[in-house]
Length: 93
Image: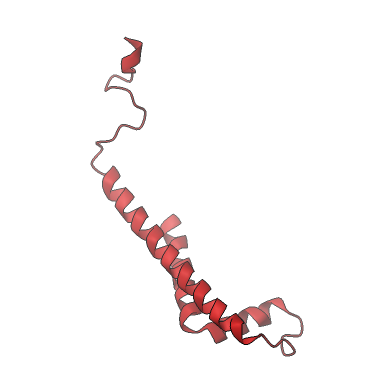
């Protein structure tokens, strides 16, 4: 489920980075009652492009970490509880 959310966020960020004017127009129509009267300043498009790039990069990093964490946990070498194979801690002896 986490991978799917990261993938959707990454695709959305990529679309926003590639077409910032279209993304701003869609968000403006969705958020304002009189979207035809709203006129964004020129820096809004640059900010949308930067935001899309950061979201896409963050999603890629998250997907990479998720993929490598699954590979590391597959061998079963790490013991999360800190105890030995019998379930007891070494300090209790």
